[in-house]
Length: 358
Image (cartoon, rainbow, N blue to C red; front, side, top):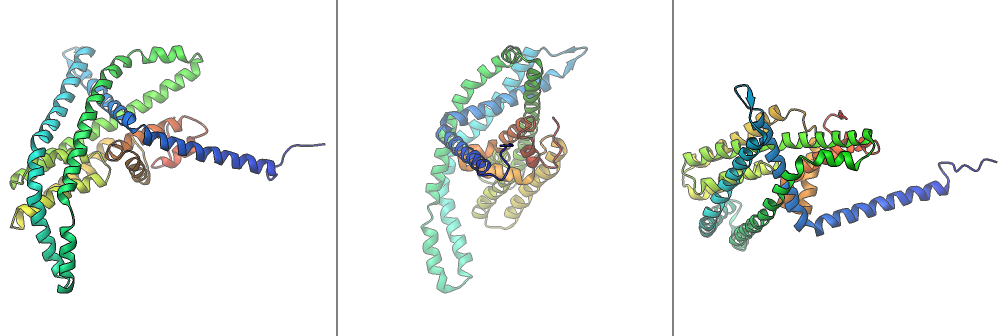
């Protein structure tokens, strides 16, 4: 007598229900762990990205040949560290030197912006003018600015923990392959693990390297536009444009909106405002929609919807830090899932065209 359970039996139904129960419970505890351990995971994630940027820069310098000889590996690593430290130092020096001045100037900007908005609102009708003006006065822009500056200070303090992680990651880079070989006895499995790590490293290195280069061009181009009209604190807005360019879609919009609002309250004429708006917008569009796609090509192969979904999720989990790291983290997850048979269909859905190289 055949006692095999059929697909529609209660036993199979409860097994399926148990699977979804365990999946929901796992996702709940996973997200809760990300939130509760953010003070440790956020600096660690930034350290990984900084390590990837260092290795990408080091590899690029190592490909340069002096005559018939290649640059020694240790010299390439030192040069990469010097370049990255110099870049980070420039960013931090600009933000630290102008943060106080921006904070002091913000009440003046707030007053002028409130007056401009009140005049615009008055065009709607005199009956709504008083209520709208009262509502505008209740907006505490100075408090918001101080909160942003406080968040930046907290980020800078966490950055020192990032600098503590990176040297140890550099030390661990060379022996890692030998450790994998010792940890995984099966040669086929060890080769697959190495292949996943190599693909993840190459994709993330390519993304971080190109994105950093494109963001630097965005910040420099925006600075030239803002400096040409004498915009206040042009260096600070240029640095913010550089940082915000790492945030997909939303970052570019904010990078144009911030200097445009400053131009609106600083200048009485319309021409400087149009120059800042049009110039910064042209820089963001050219770099984000022409240069970056040309350099990145299909190396990431992430669905545009997946980019926005990842941005929303990681921003909700880790705030601005999650927004900056949303794409690299999602790329790593997709590559790992594409090499696991059980999760490969999910990786295909996450991709841009469904073509996953394994």
